[in-house]
Image (cartoon, rainbow, N blue to C red; front, side, top):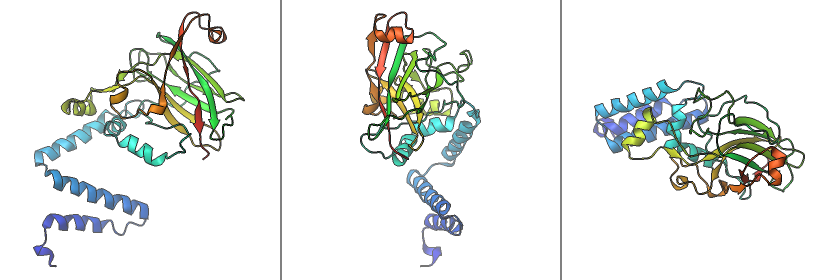
Length: 290
């Protein structure tokens, strides 16, 4: 058919697709052509005005401008709040049913945090004392001795160290190791629910679409053991009011933990230096082989 008689919008899409047809890397070719097809289909579907398109360009520009390269990563936040991060996670971490489920990495991880002894307190700011402990095992139930648990969480004010410059460096962050039996123990404070940053483009998007910006209380983990898949996950507080409406869609029922109150007379209090009551959370992690 003569292209002059065809839909010029369809012709444009085909022309753009053809420009990527000679991309040497087949995966890159697939990605670029799929991006063009879906992006053009979206534009054709919603038919944006030129003013709306420029508003979208400004939104993406401002999203990049607010990123600081260290703590604030607005593009990860955008991916999280659109559910894309969890979709990528689901595609890349299809695990056996008995392996611990993963969830979003989040934008506030900082590498190189302190190595901590078993049961060492990583909280340098006040909060309700808590102990999180359990075992790291493989899918056959064998202990993963020496597994490294990189842990981070917010302070009681709902902000992470690094994000909140008033907090001491390394506050509520640390790298723990499982012992020969696979046992780990983390002394900390009870996690709290908190709002994701609402002062940037993502916050404006959430407000404009009548969505709240809160995440349920959780503790972040990145767990590594030689020969096994690295696990990035959270442990969520049971009973948190935002479990069913996490702003970044990260909650999975298998990752919800009940914190139990314990008194100063608990054997764990003496073992880990609690001088008053505390909250105990128990969870066993299971890592599949790489």
